[in-house]
Length: 130
Image 1 (cartoon, rainbow, N blue to C red):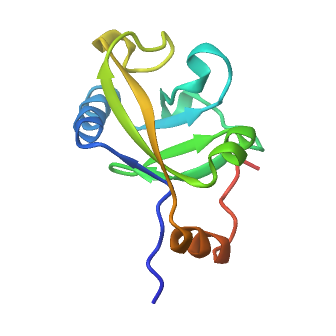
Image 2: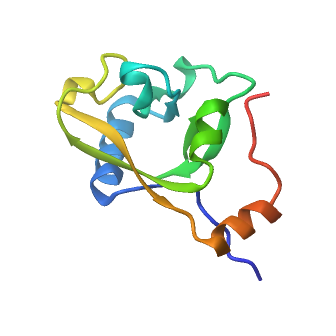
């Protein structure tokens, strides 16, 4: 039996903070566009207030069923890494739900192992917004 490989996860602090955001706002999602400025950080939106594009890639779900989407261009750049969403003190984007809380989400990454890459290469391609 092959163990599934997650492309994205949460730090403990981000998981706790995400639960608080969900209690306050309802179901949410992450999107990382790779654009300039705040676009290179993961953005947290209400699930029904952000429409993913046809080329966006679903990296997986984090926490309690929170999808994490990434633009296709960013995915090509990050496809060989495992991403961990973390939360730190600081000014977040004005559009991301954490901004009023005085914190911001960021990504920490590590290279996937050869075994993880082989497992992902043998799996179906990730779901897209198409």
